Length: 281
Image (cartoon, rainbow, N blue to C red):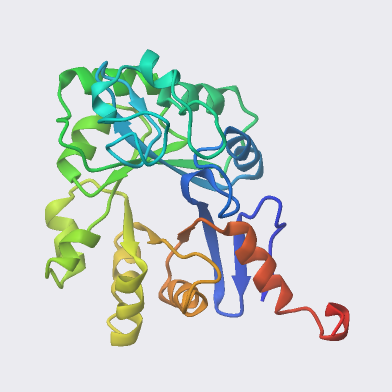
């Protein structure tokens, strides 16, 4: 196996093929603080695939946090949606100590560059009880400012994704059917066509991808032939069977794999090509 530069891990290549590495929560390493601004800058310059989570705020703006409550990721308490942008900025992330990253700031950083033509940032809309109303649509559109091309908006709730991002020129929209599949839906191809018309990217849990390979049903190839870009989530190097799942994602034709450990994947796969004597054994 061969790999890219571990300082800016964009993809890994194997005998079966190549796959891009998506930096989950902007992490290059598992120990990195989530939504790290320095990693964002490195990834944009290198042409990496990047991911942040979005939660709505009371003012109609959005912040890059995964959970609907503040306690797990910040020094605050209570629901994220109860605070406005000014109050959010007074908080500090539990890991790293920086202020939470607002969507406005994220877009400004991407705009200011430098940015490689291949760089993309996935905005993953997290499940929330807060409705996507007119104010939040306006806030999201104002944050993007018509600068949709480097971004992808995704989520489990296709109605929320399409309402929020449908008015932003150049923005790619994505759908994650993994929960529907877990609830018993079996024909993923029909499911996504029925539930998410207009989706361009799909996000599939790695077990769904591996099951497709074991069945030999060519599900990923069918979706790819229909024009969908496929992301397999979330595979961290070092976890049990992670390498076999990564190889399954490559074998089935997935375009990307979401991971908290892109640097570790590059280093581990590069090590496999290193002769024993060069490893110091």
